[in-house]
Image 1: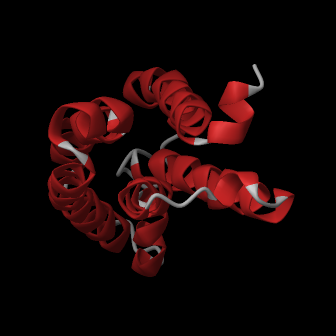
Image 2: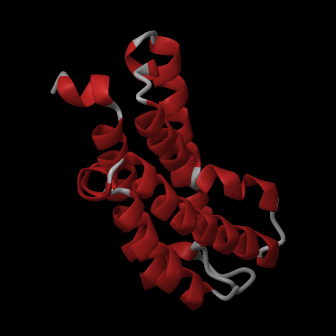
Image 3: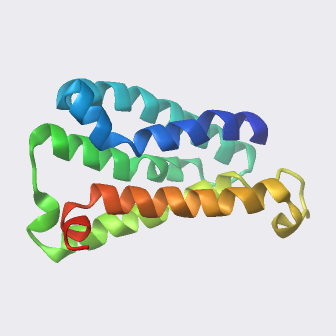
Length: 148
């Protein structure tokens, strides 16, 4: 998948997946899980194709959807696993860091030897990826967001 198509497909879907509370409030937990699952499959497939094109390890594409999947499944099953022990909170934070890493790696320029720091699209997407990761983590991590 070329870079432009990847950015056009995945960026709105990441923003959509970060609206989980709104989806659950409007659609209910079961339907929100179904709708989000379709979006997650598209994101996963696009990240997989992008990593394959860059000749990187495509199996890491699952990191791009893992924190969202955890949130929607936890909401559907009414699980409060994040507040029970600090281990799960740390693991969830590491999932978000993995999601951020995949988001950055997949938007690197296609040209070999090209400096990403001279690419204006890459420089624009770094703050967007940071914002989406931090806001998603704060929104989806109940213990941390309630203590702020």
